[in-house]
Length: 204
Ligand code: 5GP
Image (tube, rainbow, N blue to C red; front, side, top):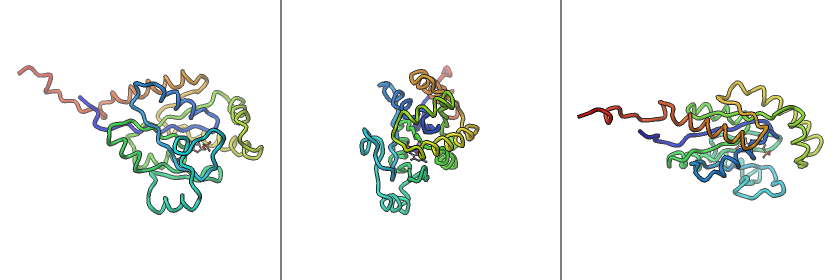
């Protein structure tokens, strides 16, 4: 009995829900078979962000060329910047049997859903409106105008939660990562993901 390909895991949630932190916690477990897909973006790097680890940072014309070359599974314009999921990397990892996480916004997730109905769609929910706002402010990387925009967008994203298979409240990073880990374990046991040869259990 075996799973023939890796699992595609799509994680969304509003800015400030803590998706990145939860994903890092998940990936820190050495026994996991997970790879995080690194997106391309036209956004400028924030302090502490590294090329090829946080994102592949691109100029707008480079990004537009990549769209023409069909290099993305999906791309979206979020907060005036382009973000896109690299096609070749994700497909090759899945073929190798690795589980791949896409940490992308709701628009992108819905585009992925058209092509990957078998993926697992998880929505990370912030504990409350207040906490969400505090997290965005505490990050201190956005202007007041950007914060307002992100809060409005957060509400719109939260309204899309009905399109996801699972919702995980992030009031504690370790607990949230552990819940996702349980979801992945359960998903891997789904009959549709396993090849079961009942004959191997039959007495000759
Ligand atoms: P940030 O600028 O805070 O890193 O990300 C802004 C938003 O863009 C987040 O919701 C993040 O999940 C989303 N995002 C990051 N990479 C991608 C991607 O490749 N595609 C899409 N559609 N959204 C992305």
